[in-house]
Length: 340
Ligand SMILES: [Zn+2]
Ligand SMILES: [Zn+2]
Image 1: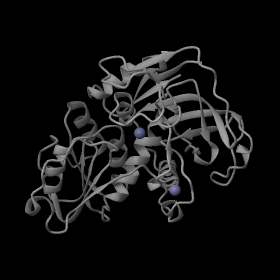
Image 2 (image 1 turned 60 degrees about the vertical axis):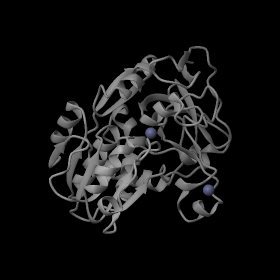
Image 3 (image 1 turned 90 degrees about the horizontal axis):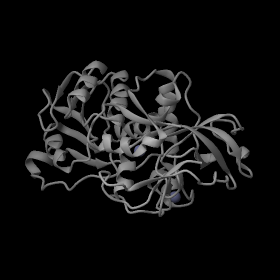
Image 4 (image 1 turned 45 degrees about the vertical axis):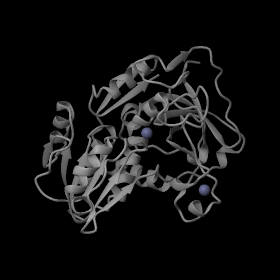
């Protein structure tokens, strides 16, 4: 089968990824599904894995963790994994996301915060992901997919959508509140629609004309540049851009008691804060770490009930390296998706 591997982590302007055409199709282990990959989203985290911003966990790993697939085979006992009331069978569609496995015995897992599990494993970082024709996923961590979406549209829901949803929860937006979104790519454009459907007023602060236009089309109340001040104080904000400098204007834009959630797994350094201007009046700064399966199910259920507009840019599997370069250069709005 064809599969991309991170051969030498480094800038995507070089050639950190290598396409192999002779890999063996992986065998599903106990409790695992073998997926024939139909579509795989291209996430900023893949860029961080490929460029080495995230410490390599598995040499030559295949990136990709927004995977829409068809179950091609089941490992021993995989049919017993209960996902949404029933197990998977060959021919079912299934999704694989970033969270691949947790220990289910640490204090975090036991209190329902498996996203904080210190023994968690991740798709496309600890195990091979979806920049390939086939991959495996533990059945208990695979997702049922909402109806009414194409494979292309479903892929970005599986990380961009889920993480955006989790970040929105971390931002503790009050009912009918004013939300600021800093950066407007794959994840933010989905979180914006969830917030709007819940009655929020959404202000978008981002660079790039295409992203700004998309924000207006989706119903943002105002659109400005990344470091601009929004037209009114914010109850909550989410920083999607991996730019630590933006923490300052985002905190300064918060109303008293407001919360800023940082959505990404990676952020450049945050400059020194001024207590009075950035934190006093009980403003809060929070990070977002991965997601639980419960978050994922909640979001996918939401997507089944509210048709989200998913802006996608298809690339053939063989052009994964180009898709990552384009993502880095901000050459498209919405989300890139590899099609096999
Ligand atoms: Zn755990
Ligand atoms: Zn992701």
